[in-house]
Image (tube, rainbow, N blue to C red):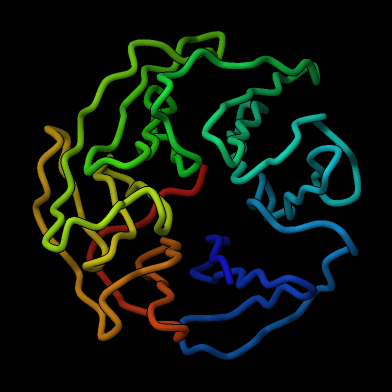
Length: 231
């Protein structure tokens, strides 16, 4: 299962054939069937589900991009849609619906998140303990990619095989890793590690003041002082 943040401190738990909306107590509020052949890759503006199949990407039932092998999508409030692929390529669909391929480092991975001011993007890096930071231009293009956030790795795991990335409203970065959720500050340093019983975190979502995480096949919820940022 994958987790995606929704408004009002809720989370979307996406599985192969069904999505469930859950609250902070783990109660299922509603459920939605996933169209055959599609998988959920994100949540857009107004909590609209973003899904993908072999031919492209959809917001609700409307096809918005022809990106193949899409992995994760994030939509900004100004109308841009960013889509990563399973091999780490990045695309942006502008407000007019035109699709652009971004220039990224060859080591960029599929997991990514966009900062609260929409000026930065952070991605995973393949076979590495680093996260890569990009500057987002006014046009929506990304540039100046560099290794910036260094994650702790006690057992020489490959972080790229694990969960996802999120921001809080102050611009701190949260990464799902084999040893828990690592919290990085603006200077790229890990300032905290939120451990879970199962240690490895396969998926994470930050909605309101609650962090949702899947570890060892179980869903955990933790209240924190800061608020998560959902583009």
